[in-house]
Length: 77
Image (cartoon, rainbow, N blue to C red):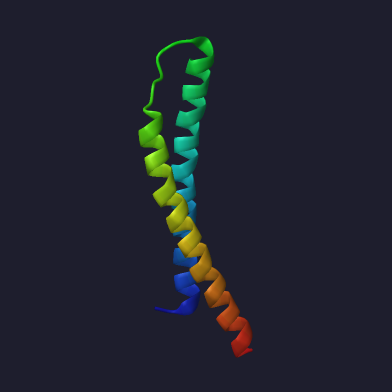
């Protein structure tokens, strides 16, 4: 795969995982609002936290790959 296309693919994957993470953040906010009102939490906070970390790990790994590819480009020129 062309290096430029791979970088684009990495960027798209990062955006996808970030969108999923934002959705989980929204669930956290809804839970906080419910907690403040003293009503039942709409989402399981343990499950939310368990889902967030793998997404962060994937984002960080993809960012590292993107940075490595960018550094390779700089060294080649």
